[in-house]
Image (cartoon, rainbow, N blue to C red; front, side):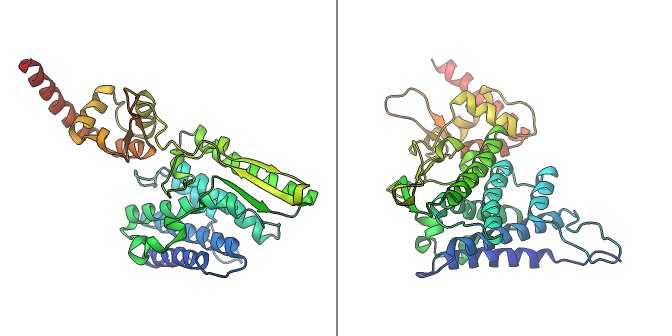
Length: 335
């Protein structure tokens, strides 16, 4: 018997509905079990979206049928593995970082479902949840031309537009040794996902979003930023400290070139290629891509710059090389 037919449109629509439901739950004025329900819906939204991407690529979303049993659809972890393994991530979305982000939320979901005490971890999971919504929007828009923003007033959405103002947060937790151990174990899992993504050269700005007091996205989050102290005394306070949240553009020019070459599948780019596109598109004046301190002679670059530059094909760079070479030759003749 053939596997059941699953509509791509239905998968996408249900995925979008699950994410909208998650946002609605999170924004309720009074809601117990808020973080847990939100994360369950968010991970479900991703599972459906990833399966839709696999279906569009004519890849199976069911395990091989066993005799006497019904078909079983693949898990979220398997869907992530298959989308990554078959290069189905859009070029504008860093698959390694997004995978780490989803796995962090999945870890939290599993603990909530299996009766672990997940209370008090809201501030830890929030940066991952915030960035997840943005990643989901970019993924659905790139793969299926569905924009989450069309269904949301973003200015009224805490998950999309606001965040805790303090870079240091205090959370009351059960001060028992059991609770302390569970919290520390969860943090260790988050660090493991983050380290794996960073070692894979992922765009860490896709992993978690941290905001400063002006509600502006600040910078990539790495495991070094997740400094957690859990005290079994002092009224059971757990302190989460996110260090140095002020730099949005972590890459030097040479590091930018290295990251771009690692991500793209075409020929190896040179500094001349980057010079050409920076000249043609005036990228150094785009705050989204480049930033320069008033006392510095050079610019630094963002994860968005890596994603954009790695998404362009060889034909685009070859054309710009010719134009830039002609431009520089003309400039020399005028001297």
